[in-house]
Image (cartoon, rainbow, N blue to C red; front, side):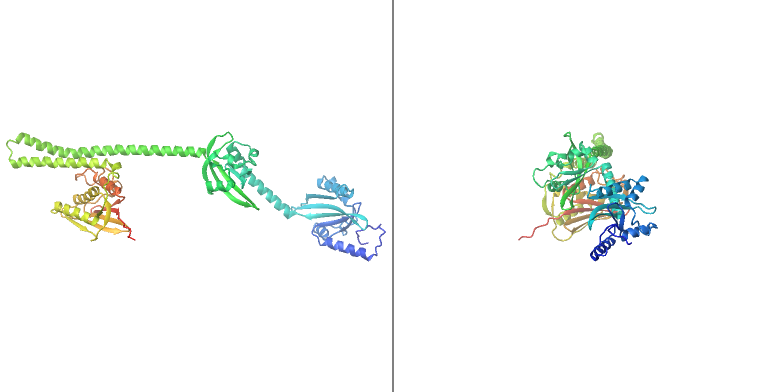
Length: 524
């Protein structure tokens, strides 16, 4: 006889059309469900199974054409329990508890792995009354996909937690009021707390007083103050000690809540190393400066001894001549000796003047006597003055813009620089050569260039050309102290200008000075 939700012993009129309609509806509904479902009577015998149950049995090689209908399900569980199946024991107990009215429902998750597939199911047992008879529904729902997702999520959480627990940086999450919700071991260790001691506490407890807020919106203000990309502030440990720390706070939205994640670092050691590096750099700079001063002193002594020896020897020679032969020398010879002495004294005076000028580097800007002047006229006057002195040996050329070019200058100081560049160009150019000075105005700057076609400057000397007492390697036979260009550079820079040099051996040299123009605001 076809299986029925009622047992064969039941006296119910099986020809009742309403019963069969109801039973057909129930079995159809059961067949539509994805869970594997069996209906048991009050003694545990299987009365009906649904389509999913039958398909699962077929897929797993069952040869029972009845799919267990008429078999006692509790006996099946008990047999499995004898094979040390703890799950079968639990299921059998759950079914009996529901049968005995001790519980209304039983629920349990269990694994059901095949040789080729890992599977998990949930078994749910509940009872109902069918036409006056107690019936049980046993439903096995495949939750493998959900279980695998749970396992992956659990593994991911475990991995994340392991990272958080072992990372050297402190990590903390707080709500919008600044209360700590989670904190990792590293963060607790940085501040000398146990993790549980900080949960629920305000994060401001971990920072020095100047970073705390008593007003509402603590986290908003705190995050703005330390800047989102991170900031160095002062942290405070449990014992009250302060230390340098790095903190970066980032706002995030979790559901409908505003949360903040913070990265915390104790940078005490980094600060110590930085201080050591800075101290080493300071010492290195000091040693380099001391070495530079020593070299400068050596160059000064070398240059001065050389530059003083020649004029002093000339003065001594002329003086001796006047002492020994003055009574017999002609007036012309006496005058020649006197002029020689005067010339060398003038040379020594210029030398002393250069040394005094270079020694006033730090005061030069304070002593400037600035006035607005026409640079075109200023340069033309210098050229005409020097041209008169050197007209027999060199040709001096000036190319201006033929209009007023206003600059704010100290005429005496800037003259020192311009004259030095022109006289150097004359000194290192062959007799009969041309020295050219040009003036242009470009983008708010007056550009003055002094060019010659002389011996040129070696490339190795160019980087140090403006250092005091430094002289190029190819000018040993020319008189000079190595101070002129250093003074020229100071003078130009005192006017907020710049000076550059380009040179090629045997071709010539060009010095370029750039000075700011006086820009007049148009009258309204």
